[in-house]
Image (tube, one colour):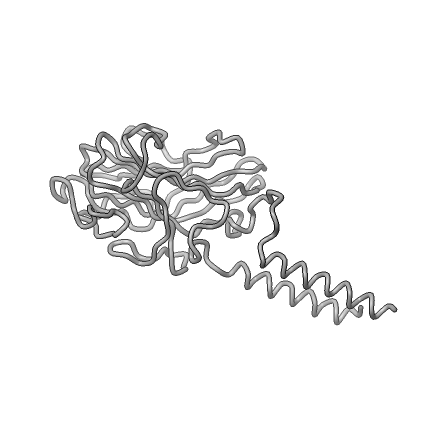
Amino acid sequence: MSMTKLSWVSALLISISSSVSAIPLFDSGIPAGWNCTGNCGTAGADGVVTLAPSGGSQYGWVSTNGGISDVGPFGGTDGSVLRSGLFAAVAGDNLQFSFNYVTSDGGGYADYAWARLLDNTMTEVAMLFTARTKPVGSIVPGQDMPLPTATLTPTDVPIIPGGPLWSVLGEDSGKCYLGPTQGCGYTDWIQSDYEILAAGNYFLEFGVANWTDTLYDSGLAFDGVTVGGKPIDEVTVPDGTVPEPATLALMGFGLAGLGFARRKKA
């Protein structure tokens, strides 16, 4: 095959690869290989939760509405967790995403949300952030919880008060326990950046939990998850299953290119 034809085939493969990866992470629902415990999903702009700055028509979410018991790393009554598929990273990769904490509960009941990095044995590597309901001051990090290991932008995150309208909260959408001065509201989108310190395979976990009751629900929205500048679904570790259709298409074009080269040599 001539260099011109090789260049053409390479350009075609790059073009197809780019178009395959152009779909934002949650626009087609929760990605294959991600695992939900409790109540998780995807949604578009809804009430106080706008689309994330990273773009796309949907974001991911977890909610205490419809959650199950004993899911939070700091205790609580019920909640939900969404965990990514296993992904590969090298030392120095930046793990980046945006999140938005939303709560209808008051500070006395201290619902909380979190994101953390786990290794391939499900051992915690880093508690990236916590957010916790309280009436005044920054709710990130959560009160009586560890400082974030991620760099957050902005660093000071007071609640935007009021009974937050968000359908993910179910019957509690628009409600606020004891009134808006008690801690109900939402944070709006916050960016999280964390430098992965060692090469390896990891899971990313998002979660939210009720504290001392199961009333007045809270939730967490998230989007724009990248690892080393690539969407997290592009660095997922193969598990031996049949390749996705897009991958098969790329393989097909590669094989076609090899066949073309053989015909030219014959």
